[in-house]
Length: 105
Image (cartoon, rainbow, N blue to C red; front, side):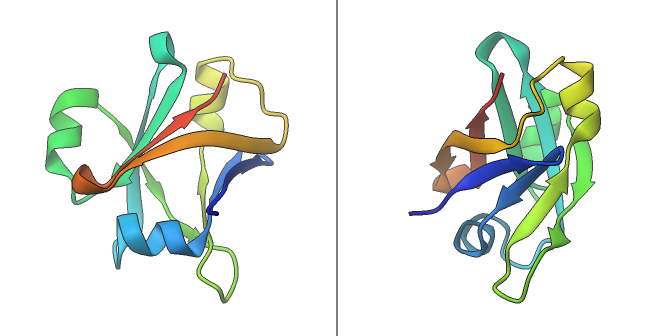
């Protein structure tokens, strides 16, 4: 089972999820929808996302040889007063549009 976790203001994505959603793309768009407490993450190749959400762009940083990656989302966490406690997060993957919806408050 794939997991997404928040550690030190970084979102940790396991390699299986990275391969499925990002493939060879090394940057992600992220936007926080305050009303839904959802962080939306998608590859920068998703042009529809830019038109809908006015996202910030982040580098997918490699974490290990398995292919796990992280996104440094400190500014989104601070701007939206989100609890930065390290923890696993609930999420949903929309494979068709290459979108990850992470529930975070």
